[in-house]
Image (cartoon, rainbow, N blue to C red):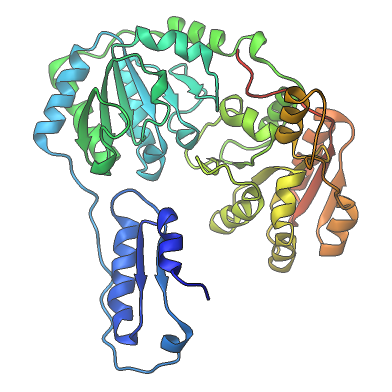
Length: 421
């Protein structure tokens, strides 16, 4: 109902199509699915005005398309093999493309062969299990001083399925960028050698090629275990975020799906919540949008009904889409929503207080009684006032009940999760 809808949605979609004739629909849908299943996965849009939907026409339906993911050129793979085999201390940088490309197994195999540490973006969590000594965690949202001090030790960065938006961490070393979208190669970092291809296929070819020119490298378990321990030393612990994050992880199964909302616990979880399998840690990526966590969790549960799903939310963000409790109740979607309630937009409040002599404006929120709200919507409501141990029991119990649950955790102001360490 607004002018220029296509232009409005263009920045957040990969492909857009306005249909004014019903005859165009089969081809438009065919192309939309092609765009969804090729290249870098992103949303597509088809816009059909009501007048067109009410028209009638004779149309010919098309067969569903079958699309192969692109295979990297032999020349680019050969150059990649040469770079890696000559690198003395390579680092693997795993992004969301490893997850969407179902290449976690291949990436782990390459890391094991090279004995190369793996650091993941938030979107790449689960590309390698955090139980592996080769995993050195994920980038923090900001101020990853440990990694800034370590990055110069690596002479080659093998970046897989990432746009390298944390490229400010790099210190001039060569990057071998493997990406399904050729437009992303070298876009954010100049000293780049690119391989345009599917991550799964490309990593397989690279590993096979490396095996023909070099032996597996000797284990670095002791060395990398020390690096990981240093990265997550006691000085990096922030409470109460640490205790809440750890207890939720401890009561969720390995394949449980954790939705990291834009809240204090969510920010902290980015590199402190251990992830053991692909597609089990979901963020809003670089959008940083409040309110996405709960509806995303509902979608994840519908897609994976046999998996435990927990959404971590703040009170401010949760209220953006609180009406989705009705969806959960109506369709019996047993997602556990954990709402940390500090009666504020926590980041805004803390920044105002710290930057403006203790003054705040507009950051405090007036919340409903969340237990009465849960009852009104017909979902289970649990209030946790006994800290992390009680929260762990509540989440564990809720995961075993075939009903949607809202867990409220009243908290006070929390320390800055973005501080340097």
